[in-house]
Image (cartoon, one colour):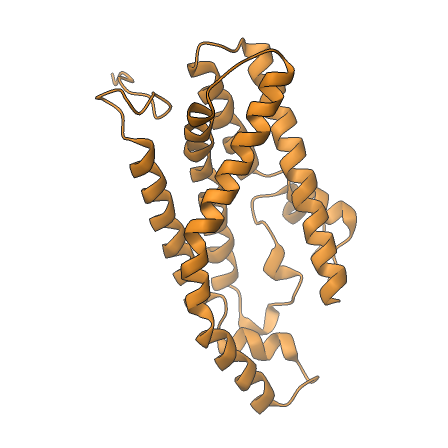
Length: 226
């Protein structure tokens, strides 16, 4: 029998717990690996040609591909900032929700909880990259690049060239989101300041805020590009 002797949500001052700085460093490293995998296996010349179809000449597509490849280093440079922003935003929303309920948890502790839950997001991104990488380049569309293979949208709805609002909404309901919510809930309970019902409310409210903003951003970008 294995007993849980450590918690990833423990205060970083505990000698048995990895520091928050090291935890964040590991997350940044994992994010960089995903950026590399996306550049190598998703943003390939074959996929560029498939997305362009007959609308552009081959040499134009190749020029666009070369431009994207030259700019790839920006993805590596932005990975730490994006990771910090995404974790910090979730931590801020969770802390504000706690404060509305009269619960005070130091931001550093909430940030650590959010950072631990971020592993689920990285896992979801890995699934998406693997799913795209195994598809034939000719079968890739602009819509399929945004498919979350572990979501309700991928299971219940067909793959549209221009996914509907319902499709985007159901994409937010996924195994990744469920695991993320469990980690966030567990972390809040580990603080000893939140009751089970309160932790469930804070977790659900945080997920709703983050998912709604993500949904709005996705639709805005789609309208802008399309």
